[in-house]
Image 1 (cartoon, helix red, strand yellow):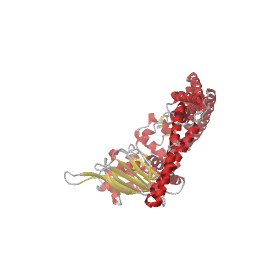
Image 2 (tube, rainbow, N blue to C red):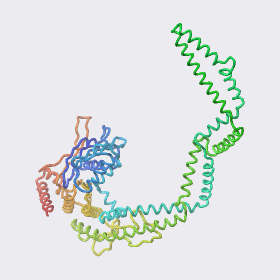
Image 3 (cartoon, helix red, strand yellow):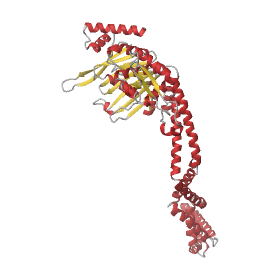
Image 4 (cartoon, rainbow, N blue to C red):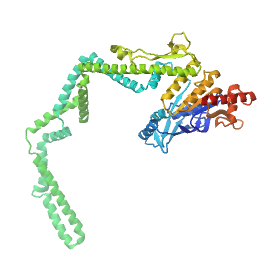
Length: 574
């Protein structure tokens, strides 16, 4: 359940802190006073899309904090697991703190269990914590998809519907792949032959890492072999092998310097430097000699190197221009070839796979239709009982749904909601035929049907918090007590928050909050704010009187309000 709601800079709500409790909570107030902003705050916590225009004028961002007290059971355990998995947050002492901040551009920042989280994570957690139902639910119930989901929620077949949708999507994907292959079979075979040729060419090339650069260097050496040999001979002759070589002169100089250092120790550094130079010269000569040894090459090597360079150069022109480009192209061709030769690229295999996939969809479809047919009777009977309590004594509801379907047209006719459509039909008056709900019910009748469905599903579900936004708007005061009693019954299993304008409904409240506007500030600096406060004792009766008769101070209106409260207590206890 929601324990505390803290709101800051949400439109007219500059600041509000509301402490909620179990049972039925009613929110009332004058039209335009801001009572629906409390439900907007709950929508913020559920992760719904919130425009930046809701940030209060003069503020940079709005913030809503909700403190949820988790109980025991699978739903609370799922919340704890989600919080840990999605954002690494924790739930301490069964209290979960959820915070969302929205700036003027509509960007959100979220914290769940004390840790930063994504808006997606907030939506996932929010689905377990609360549900929000507004006046639009009556219109939504006209849609076949919503009617199907409602029946599945009652019958516990939502998971089976998900399996059917997944199988249907998979079968359609196979069919699309088969159609693609069949339409371009000739082009596919030509492409496959070309890929195999390219792959073979690159495989047979066997290009080593850095091989091309090494071959270019070797080719340059082989092409300049005679000149290089002459330069090496000349260098070694001058440095080491000649009659007046640098090595002999350096050795003579080093010996003389060592003798001089024996007389003047300040020359020892010069002698050491000459010794080092002698060692460096010897090392350089050894490297030049190694270069000479490498010149003893196979005379046919130049032709072999030139042939390999031509082979690699041709591949680089086709698949390069660089060696890295060639390797990337080789990987791409290998991957495309593997995909083209995969089993799912074979039309015959795909045809058989499509048969198997279609039969799997059909089997799940039959199972889903049987399960829905089994749930349809009890669902209609439960709704009828609730409608009788709401003054629709003779109204009957039934589920219209075909129990057979053509497998050959299944992939074309089915939707993600099932193989055949579900249509809720009603008969408002005895002796009249059944008609589709979308063609029959008035606004007030639809509102009562929605409430009956919510009550029926509430018995199946255990969502901690149900939020209802004026779903009684088209019912009228005459049936308000029946509606209030129904909400009171729902509140035995859920924390229920409702915005209402009907005094008979509000009379059942266990907690009543009033929202009104006030203007503060001096001339030229006035600001409008919405104020939220919980009503106590006689304030409740005054508000009920104002809701019923427009005058909360009239003695007759107050007396009527007291009678409403008494009647609500009698019905609630009954």
